[in-house]
Length: 368
Ligand SMILES: Cc1cc2nc3c(=O)[nH]c(=O)nc-3n(C[C@H](O)[C@H](O)[C@H](O)COP(=O)(O)OP(=O)(O)OC[C@H]3O[C@@H](n4cnc5c(N)ncnc54)[C@H](O)[C@@H]3O)c2cc1C
Image (cartoon, rainbow, N blue to C red; front, side, top):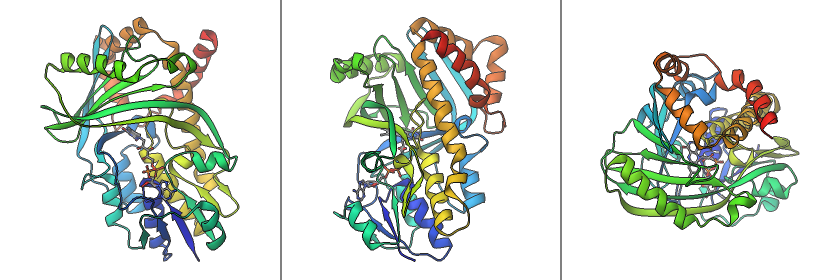
């Protein structure tokens, strides 16, 4: 059986590892000169958003024999709004590093792959489609899916970020929801060591936001972050992305072509997380190719998660800075604090997003 995987990122490599476990050696085509050859950034996974999975790292190891070593367990998430600060505490997810870093998730997955990787690949999908029995599209964006008429783009995002040096606690992340500075968007700080972190702003490119100057916004936010963290963060590297597509495919398989990772629609519109869905979609596509399971069936919970997360995004967008202040304050409110921390913990079974979606839908309808 001949399988081409286009893209040696999270979803492509997870697909390759799973195929190999079933005795199939795919050929992986990667356009860059090595795995993870892009800017280094810190990312997180948040267990609450992956229910019914509780602990995603344990789940990947126990169920699929895929090993990932995060940089830390995320145990403290501080939320800054315009006038308030609130925090979540407990074992709520993991922090990890991506890109060129030797310990990045893609480099860790690459270590588990034995198949050939064709680097600096200039092969087009159409060519691979003719030459291989199966093609797995894992290029990390909705480009090909759109070209094949198989993708609904809900919105695009502008992102600007930097690696900063300073003093950080490895298991503590920070997030800012301040619509005055970042309209309908957010910002975050994710450390990947005690000395280095990733500071990023991201906002939807709605018509209202097009005239915004991302550099001006960054400058304002950078000053705010230095002030809130009470340190002078030193920028050592920067990146900027525009038109980052948030959307989902219509069909997970079209003829001999499988859509995985961001080509599938892995990024949750609510908070922009896509790592676990990318890895799972890669695994599920391999199951389908090996006839162990049907990708269409296996991916149903991933579609549900996307749709709930889109409702969450619309909910966030319907709030204003005052509402966000109330939200942040409530995180540490006397009776709610312990309860919220319990719900977000990776020991909890509660699918918060599923439970809240109907209420958020009504709220969103009333607001619109
Ligand atoms: C700034 C930023 C921060 C993020 N933060 C988080 C976070 O905190 N938590 C989270 O869960 N998710 C986060 N995400 C989303 C997450 O990174 C993605 O959902 C995930 O990496 C997608 O995996 P993938 O396999 O689809 O693509 P990738 O892992 O990006 O891999 C795609 C690969 O395909 C290669 N490629 C592209 N085109 C071609 C081609 N034509 N031929 C061959 N190879 C090709 C690329 O070079 C790359 O190696 C973030 C994304 C960004 C941009």
